[in-house]
Length: 188
Image (cartoon, rainbow, N blue to C red; front, side, top):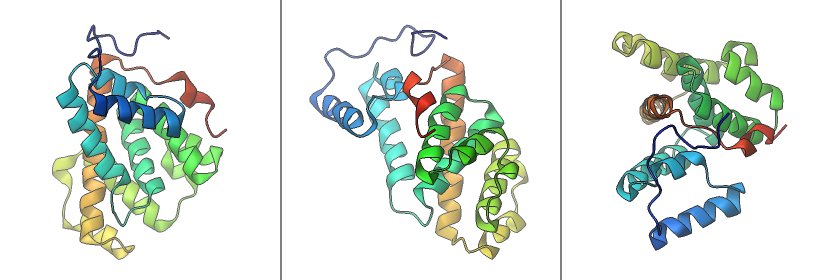
């Protein structure tokens, strides 16, 4: 492993704008660290703000999906894409939110081994297909989600979350983004 956040030489804006400093302080307070993904984007405050606005809306905003379900989507998409950063970070979040270290490990390896309920399985099969073969999504895929209780708004949120992590995984892979060491020991 390396001490660098990414393989790119993109220094963080210095000094950070006051609003960014406050955001990073909130991260330190709530998480005990500033996630490296935020530090990686901090070379361009407009890009950082766009990233955090989308993340905060998708992962923390109003939704029929629980926070755990959204983290599960992040892990499944990242597992398919073999995104080191997101598997470590969001695997830790699944462990923490579920209170089940085994669930976090199963989700990283193979969500089918996790013993999930029908709703979660349908959601993750949809996220998997959307990641692997988006052009093959059809009405029967959406109907399978409706059949287990998801609304059309929920389907939009599932798709948006999966889409966001597909984008994030590609940026993390392209830049060799490294997860914070702190994630590895969390919620074990």
